[in-house]
Image (cartoon, rainbow, N blue to C red; front, side):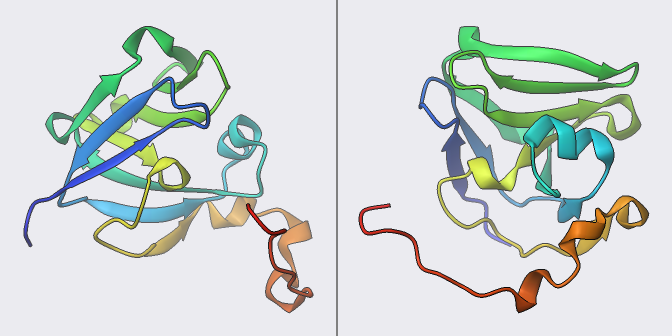
Length: 137
């Protein structure tokens, strides 16, 4: 697999990062902590080795929160975008929220993790009516 760089950042642009492929994995996480941290039904993460990730802008704007004894979630102090996750359970890895990347990565999501914690209101998700975004968004 060829190595390439993927760029991303927060909503306001204060924090920017670059990730060097190949990624290790990509998965949808349904755990309650990810749901609360992102205000969403689930979060899609991908993992890379720590030496394949670097902050390119706004290091001072990156806040870190110890969400459990073994895990840290990082977010932008300006806009609140939750972007990163590290844990002693996966030492040497950085987990990046896929939604914070500017374009595609080198793999599609491969699994649902903590699926037993999936929220009930996702039932019928794909059967809901579909509407396009308003012009200009």
